[in-house]
Length: 496
Image (tube, rainbow, N blue to C red; front, side, top):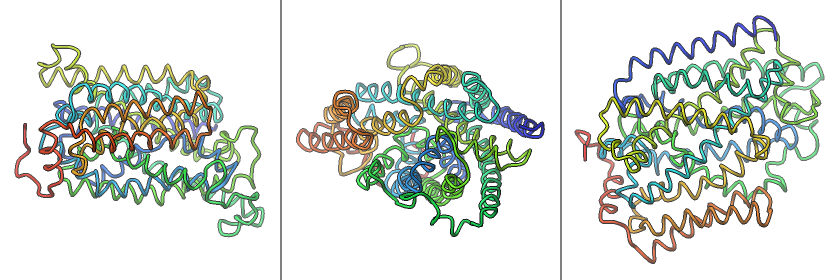
């Protein structure tokens, strides 16, 4: 690392904090903090949705898969995001926006109390919050691994530094700060990505290769879209999982739809994000696909950092490291905001009587306190990530497998065909999915593909099947799903 690289990194952190300070002045109430007051333009929400959807895991775990197995890394882990978000643009995104405009919700789980009942809402809130702590912890751990490789910063301090800067701006400015920093991060990440593409292209040229013909020189199997470890059925079910996760099951992404002024803009938000997921990961991962021809590493997760160290000049190395930081900080900040919204709006009022009568100022202050607590807990887990199976294990098997049971009742509960499905099916679906994960992962020790596939399929079958038999939805369920299916925008937001 050259002095110029350090100056780039320091400048980046200063800019992020400055944005947080500016955004703090735009936040006057809880609605501003959690949903940007419903005033965020679709293009900003779309970039924010995209940036919040993946992190330094791309440059650690997925880069390792690209180094070991080739293009399957894009086909399995990135392409499904484009398909899933495209589906959600028409199926879920407008409905999230209608929930805010017609029911004044500021949390993705807020409507569940009326749609199912309070116990169902609480079960999903607590289990989802716990899962997100582990999810964000894996992101901190991933970026800390890169810091260690780049500059020798110990993992513990890498986690603390990254989380500390993120905490400063996201606590101050809420969703506005998240989105604005993500816009800046998107620009920085773009510069860094193209710098890496050019540098690696030059390295290939020195070997008589280029981005058009290097594919034939790759190890056998590196151009196969699927492998025995990640077969086609895994890709198909992974798309199903990500359709739930990236359209609201991952709560922070639902907030981007809530934040837009209308359901039409929410749809545009999802379409823009879908396009970015389709195209942009190819730019990011192109150097990773070429890596086996250029570098050798003991641990495949170090490959992206090693390429940056080998091929980038002073200043650009710092820019790439900043680009890596940007993805992790974007996702973690938006997760922290979503969790604080769920805890403030959905959990506290049901476990602490005083919280039911919070003023708007008290709710805003509580949201900030809870953001701090969430980040601190995730930091503690991140420091011990390797003891939990490593970054890829947490992201793929823990989060990928468990997000289905948590999100299926929440997502399908918005759709008219499931308006008769009630709380019994929702809770059994959740419990059955978690049980199937425990059996496949810890009792039967099956592979990752089956571990991820089984819980979401079990939850889906239980939710649909039991719901069709019992049909015990509360009276409000049909009204809610009917209103969410209507395209017409209300003249004034409902405050029901």
